[in-house]
Length: 114
Length: 115
Image (cartoon, rainbow over all chains, first blue to last red; front, side, top):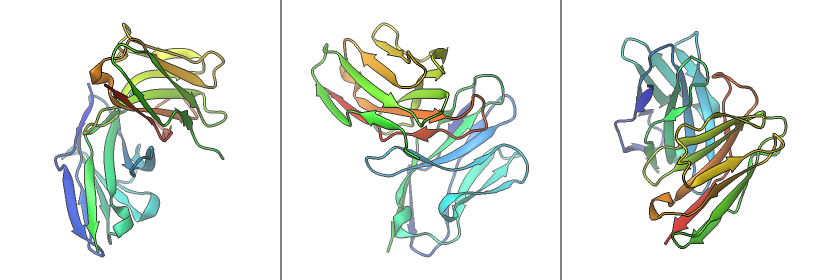
């Protein structure tokens, strides 16, 4: 069964600094990987996805993620953090076969200080 | 384009009572999902519909949870009777096609507190 791990409960970064939110995955087939963001009292919003192709995926709000097959990782990055990026970030993975469901990690809270 | 709508936004009930949540997906989206998000955890899929048929309900506690999507559009999730451990946010999502490529669009969720 597929799974994802987000090893950090919280990431703290100063505004203007680069940020990285880590994610590792486990699937039996080819992985389809997603990042979602959740703001307080709101549903999850899609940021970006990796299906195939370039290992560096660009998404919404200046975020990008790097797919690394050998390390089974899909870390979320942004060159310059904003205070408004403070939120809960979820990595998710879906196996390539059939009706495989989307499996989410436990989430990482990003706190960007002014 | 309107997003996924859910109601109510908040619900407080006593254990052993019943409760129902409603979801209206984005127009034209054939696939609808219900997730349970317990505090401190990621969302967990409860049930997935393709049009009005169920394609995955393997993690739905069928002794107390039920869901339907009668006309292939909006959906209702019911819990009867509720337990303390059902306290969570219930998220509805929809996507435009079956299959792994398309992102899911989430509603704001219903926060359920069982006392």
